[in-house]
Amino acid sequence: MEKAGEVNEMVHQMQKFSWVDYIVFVFMLAISAVVGVYWGFMKKQTTQNDYLLGGRNMKVVPVAMSLVASFVSGITLLGSPTEVYMHGTQYAYIMGGIFLMSIVMTQVYLPVFHELKITSNYEYLSLRFDNRVRLFGSVLFAFTLVGWLPIVIYVPALAFNQVTGVDIHVITPIVCLVCIFYTSAGGLQAVVWTDVIQITAMFGAMALVAIKGTIDVGGIDVVWQRNWDSGRIELPNWDPSPLARHTIWNLVVGGLIYWLQANAVNQTMVQRYLALPTLRGAKWAVVLFSIGISVLYCFCLYCGLLIYARFYDCDPLQTKLAKAKDQLLPLLVMDVLGEIPGLPGVFVAGIFSAALSSLSTSLNSMSAVVLEDFYKPFQRKPLTDQQAAWLMRGVVVLLGVVCVALVFIVEKMGTILQLTMTLEAMTMGPQLGVFTMGILMPWVDSTGALVGGVSGLALMSWWCLTAQMAIARGYISHPHKTLITEGCTYNYTISYDGAGVISDEDVNPVLRVSYMWYTLAGAVVTMSMGIVVSQINRARGKAYVPPAPKLLAPQLRWLYREPPHPTDELYIRAYEHNKEPSQMNHESTSINMKPMNERESINS
Image (tube, rainbow, N blue to C red; front, side):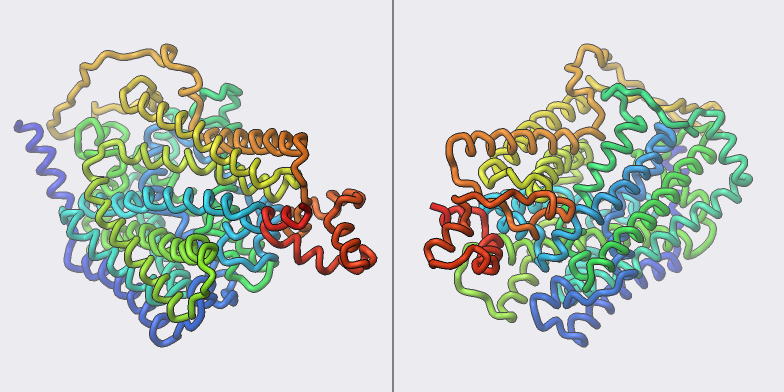
């Protein structure tokens, strides 16, 4: 008991959050609220286009900064350093996948969405297929978002609790209310400009920790040497086995597919690319986003090396100085910055900035999906701008309140972080597969796309949930780097788990496949089933209508030029109207932009 008391006393002594730190933290929240007031009340958002897309007149650099800010949540800022501390630098090679993603996205996916001038990217699914597929995609998005957002809020609240001792249920509602206010009031403009402020806070916080921590440890050569000696500095792992947790193959190839889903077909990201007035500007935003996210990852990964260099001979996880892996970085911050008033406040502001930017973007995107995908396709009476504004603001407030309430549930579920990652993996692959079939596979019809999406979701649900249950029960384990406690200068107690150990070889090999392959597997299953079902429909004589060229990737618009067939809708309509087929070109194009099921009725 004395040993545990000594550790608890050290934790209490490290919670040096002064009144200066509180001022810094509150100042960050106040700036966000002021931005919301400015765009919500002084710069009126008069139309749906203004609220959801900033009038499609946003600037490239702020949008790129907003994209980085919203993609990087507190989970990333706290989890990436932990990954390096526990498993080494192999994860850094995922930046190769980010680079490849920027090429594929700018050349294949982005031109299609941007040229259609849509608001929700799920509108594309109704144009290319039908409303069934559109509803499937938007429901998956909503389902994933509601499960992910409470974690985004909870993780930084946990960090705040580590450095201040303030209960998470006190700080969470306060921070979320500020976010709900500026998002509902100011729309996308407020979201983007608060993101610009928040990404500055994030970079500043990570840079402060990196610079001050390096100085305290003894210089960058000490950081490098201690991590090199422990095997944490790693060359690429060329192991071709799909069971290996991180290899150059799953990080670059699997990372490419993961990042395509996250950036190229995800409503929260695509919505801001569509807010830019030109396709060229949107492509530049992708490039700047890729650079910005890579730089921030470098900061996070270096902080992981720094944590080990500081605690190389006294692991805080075994001694319970840090009660959870995600508290390693806050522990380092209080150890390095705790003596300087204001700097812990900057760090906490940076971590919460990451959460706020992710939350605000998701709330704004969800309001777009509810309006465009859940309301408009099923209601003939159009809403006035005022009615639409109330609906969108209502969605923001309601979803925000639900997420705050779900934090109470998150706290009670010990494996919630794993479950959230599983939820994402279940839905990511099928979503990417459905969009890819639409953009790159003109022969896939709406029924094939829907059956493929449902099949991919069913398989990935079984795979991911079963694998996560095996991990939670200890059937699957991933060995980490050596951690020692020989150099500790305080008393501690190490508790050992007496449970029996089950060999990984006794577990189904499919369940041991690296999580980095999940998104690719889900997409491949979805596309394979979509192709098979579409071919069966063709063999059964179901009418096939080629999609309009605008709905395909630019590379296929000239390649996919089949010679006209007497049963083509162009010839049918020309015959019915006693005109030459060339005279029907304009009409045919407008018909082809209708949902697939409406176009099929023309051919019947």
